[in-house]
Structure formats: C-alpha cells, structure tokens
Image (cartoon, rainbow, N blue to C red):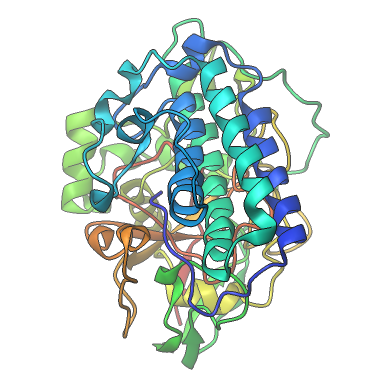
Length: 423
C-alpha cells in the first residue's frame, strides 16, 4: 500500500489539534506492537510484507526526514545509519536496504526502535508550534501515512504468524453474539449518466484521488452487501477452483501454478472449514464476509455468480452518501476480523472491495515535485483498485474517493467481494 501525497487543497489542522492527532496515531502503533517479542517484530514472512519493527521505524523516519531534518534548524538525526535501513522507495533520498531483506535487520532491537520513536516524537511535538505551513501539511500527511502502515502492520504480522506451524494467537478470541445468516443478495440500482468522481478539495486526500472529473456510468446495479463465507463455500463445492471457464487466463495460470483451492488461511479440519486469524485458528463464520481473496478469485466468483465486479466509479457513486467512518474498522489493538453484515448496505469497513478498474491516473493527474511525490505515478500500472476500507483500516482514514490498489494475485490484505451487474 504505497504512501501517497496530499491534495494541494488540503485543509491545515491547527497545531494543537494536529499534536493531539499525532499522539493518537503514534500511540495506536505502539499498542499494535505491544504483544510482540523482539523476534516477532523482526522476521519477514514474504517480500510483500515487512517486519513490524520496520513499519515502526519507517513511519518514524518519515517524520524525522521530511519534517525535522528539513524544517527544524539544527536538528541532528537520531542515528545517521537509520535512513539507509528505513527508507522505503524514495529514490531522491538515496540508497536503501533491499525490501525483500528487511527481515535481516536484527539490530536495532525492538526496544531501540521504540526509543527512536520516542526521540522523534519529543522533537516533533516540541517543534510543532513553530513549524511553517508546509511542514504542518507534512505532519498531517505523515499521520495518514502511518495509518496506512498500521493496516499493513496488522496484515503482515497475521501472515507471519500463519507461517508458524504452532499457529499461535496474537490476541485472545473476543466474545461474539450469534448472528443470523443474511438473506439472498439484494440489488441497488446505481446512478446512470454523468457523475462527478474524485476528491472535491475539502479536507485531506492523497493525490491519486484527484483531480475531480466526470465519468459516464451505464445502467447497473450494486449488491447490497459483500459476499459471505457461506456463498464462497458454495463456489468451492461447485468446483469453482477447477473450472477454467470461470477464470481470466492469468488467474487460471496462477491457480494451477500455486495450487490455489480456497481463500488464504482457509483449511479443512475435522470435516469443516477453518481460518487462521489474529486469534489463532477458528471455525469459519459462514455469515461473515469472505476475505483474503485475490482479484483473480473475486473475478472468477463474479463470473460464477452471473455477475461482475463493479467499476471504481460505480462504487464511488454508490458509496458517496454513506458514512465513511462507520462500519467495522480499526479502533484498537485486538483480534479484529470481518463481521457479519447488519443494518442495511455498508460500503465501509470489514473488507476492501475489489473493483474491475485498473489503477491508473485520473485525467489531469500530475505528481507533485519532491521526494514525497514519488509513490504515485510510478505505481500506476499492473494493479487494480479496491474501495471501502477494512476491519484493519484505522477509523476515519478512508473516504468514498479513497483508492487502494494491489496486484491481482495478492490476498494477504482483508480483501473481499461486492458484486455488480448490468441493467
């Protein structure tokens, strides 16, 4: 989930409110790390994931580099070796440690990374009242950037623990009230004609969310909820993973080469389906939204169901009137997971929803100048857009125009499916 840059029209938050937000964001990251040992926080389970310790240090490096180093006269780096270790993709910031080898960074220790965070926090909060507007905007950006990494923190550590044969729980299971199975999918007729898409210039946004522009929608309908685990089991039972007719060519090649036969973390044990989660391995809740599925799987399921994936423009037009801060989103550290749908159509929380739209720039898009503009344009190829946020998305982070994006085979995020169809 690359870090993007703010809209030039972003509203600056007063320094005191920004300080409160900064403290809150930084505290949540520490809370997410609280259950981890130094070993837990060091290991990297695959190239797409990063160690927990790296996430904690990289987000700190962002504030130290782009705010303290560049805007606070006389500030000295906490450790001059850290930029090489904790730079991510910023070519303008020089050489960096290879992404796939981040799990080799056994030093600094987790406690030393916590000390690094404390040092930068103290320096930034002390400097905040005197920072120029440009630097305040970067602090706001850094908070949104850290929230993106909090979601990655959760999903990366989940993947790491799933690789342990002991399948340890990160958090104890939370009590759950029984929920009735949702009824058949209902359909909401979508808007047709010309609609306005993208960020409207009010408040914060990443630059890939704009410029705002017009899109033409044909007659269509959107499902009133996401696909459930029970419906996915029907897909499996009907041979969905063995029917080449349902799959895109690249998707079918992926299924065959990787031996894919179910969503990530699913296993059949004792005659039933189970999943691995932050609370260890548990029976699957058939009423909950299916998650950890790739674009290829989402597209195949939609074909099997006689439907399709929505475009990102159809999705945004449908979701614009709903509360982006509602639903099942991340508020605290714990055994988070998607929960069964209730209370009508919900477009935010639980699972990121795959769309059929390629991640490409909007008309008139131009990357901003400087290092923080690097993450956008160069990533706008080969990926698909997801919308809506998940149970691991910090509450208040998402918007109707928010564009997440991943490669079509990736599924370690909390990704799910909402169907659409033509009218």
